[in-house]
Length: 339
Image (cartoon, rainbow, N blue to C red; front, side, top):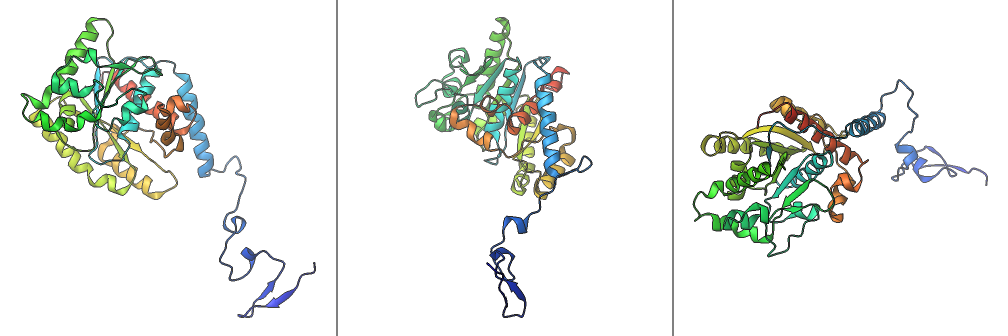
């Protein structure tokens, strides 16, 4: 077909054989007109090339270490943030899985009535299942309640059920209500030590609030791991969380300390993520884990298969980032970090 030219209303010449996206005044941009694709040279440092290089580096570090060194003593982490949706449960599940898969003994305490941590680790937690409720309200020995994770050797779980939703009301009238989890946990850890089966790490997943359940966790804990979503709202409640931790340290648990900050849902393509990361690092310094956890479809998919992302897709960016974060935590523990 021959090209037919005509004038547009504004006097421009338009070629009828061109696709609409190339015509003046077109409102439908094509991929070709919006983006240009170039092959980076060896000296070119594009975001895609940098991401690929970082992925390869993470894979090399993950495969280079078969086992993490054991900490000097059992480290008890409270995974807490008053804001919901920042990745507390995801962080608890995947850090615990990474530590266990590298040869350490790990106990996860699911203190959230929703029981999402128990779900992700394939632990039954239907209503009436014995778990953390029986431990803190009835005083049942943890040895009768802890369940092994079927997919990850060395990982055990104290499950949560919906019964836990009413525990805060029931705790109000109990003696030493803030320290009931601490007493149960310390007794269990001592029993494991005597049986020559010491637990290396305890991770307590907290609900997104500062009620009696979270207070129990912070009295039982020695270290606080704070996942911080790389978005503006995540910074708003951070100061309040730190003040609450200071109050608990002053009045209930002087051994509690914020030792680990983990940046989650990081998107390196946005200035917002970079800005939030910079602010967090400037405030917390070396407490911030070097490797942030990226936004990842695999991380979101894994719980629907009752798995951690590390067992679901061990080569994904999310799995490798959590493995690297766990490695940093274990290195600090092997050096005898503050407990």
